[in-house]
Amino acid sequence: MQPSSDLQQKARLIEVNRQRLEQLKNQISQLEIIQSEHLEVSVSLKALSVADPKSKPSLIPLGAGVHIPLSYEENGHIIIDIGGGILAEKPYGEGVEMLQKRATDIGIIIDQLFNEAKTIEQKIAEMATLFNNEAANLPPAISSEIEQNEEANSKPISVEKPKPSRRRKGFGSELTLDD
Image (cartoon, rainbow, N blue to C red; front, side):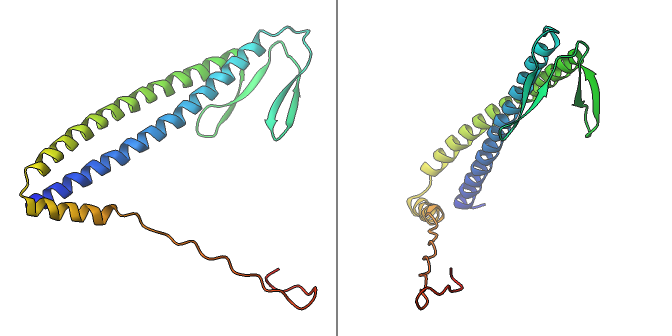
């Protein structure tokens, strides 16, 4: 294999690993959001499970300014997704346990993805160092050819914005198809 094609292949591998690292970071942030949602709901359910039976009704927000009134039941139940789109009615305590277990499981997955991301970062650093060392040892003619290829590949692609079309005015106050 020629030195220049070998370097180009290494550069592609570095870029693929960087893309994979970015995907992992996105997955981690999404999982962290889901984990915090589970923890918030479990805290709310704990509060409901120990609420005073004489307490006033509460409002549960649905979104868009819509709330559902909720009055305390001593042995209240929730409807929870137990997987596969199957819903089950569970007491508050079991619901809290299920949500905390899910949050813990999500935390384990986050840790695994975080470790994988660290490994990929190390791999990228090693590959970049190797790439730079090999590029420094190339003859000047080959290195200038590689630089030209990299410059050609790294030029930003310009996308022209379409010019806004002028509105044509009809005679007097007539409406046109453009209106």
